Length: 304
Image (tube, rainbow, N blue to C red; front, top):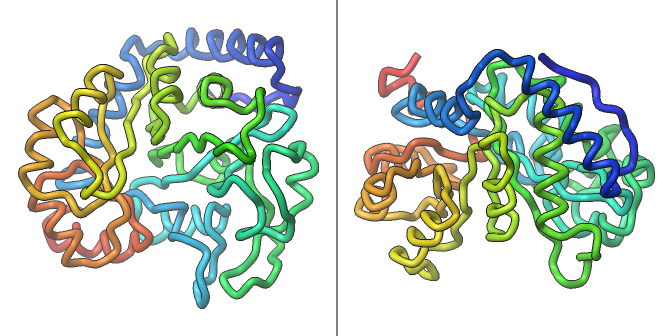
């Protein structure tokens, strides 16, 4: 059951009120399975790999028709055969979630400066830029708007983007971000479709501490910098459902992840040969700028 969100500020009282609304919605669902189990099963059912469109159909880039993290890009990814999409969320100064990758608005919008310095209303006055730097009619979307344009079967990887030192404020840290995102997902009634992920350990610990039992995945960086025993030990200590490593991961690395009972959802895989290698290695999901290419790879492997 989907609920329209009451757009009120997210102070501590606001978050508490949204949590109460979310709990009421969850109590009406009639499904006793925690969301993490449902999402794991849905990903497994999409073998040999789930197809998730990275920021929709990829980064804002010259010649590409869609700005990243825009509603048209998300719709296009689904039209190209994706099973779902990946997006990024951050907090505005007044405590609302907005879909945005960078700490600042400079690269992708007509505005400048830290998103954390803007209210939701102010940030919504910005317009997303095309890959050639031309303003479009699109504005940075809310999470509610994204779910409104997606099929009700679509998986959504919500990456929690924790601000760096310059843009981080006392009200936009990892725990507040995680609590706000969790409450909004519950209030929308979409928890059985959401994968939460982040590079930030505090954010993922906060997601895991949520009583709803969300699917949680620790993001990992480029492979040369990863100490795999330590990374898997950290994922175990945070009680994660998956790790999201950069796609150049050897088969033995995938095997080690799967041996821990974790799903392996890799990013960002854009060439057919790399998709084939990732599938051969045993990954469970592929996050890609090219969902149409992955759709064809999966079709050739017998997935309808």
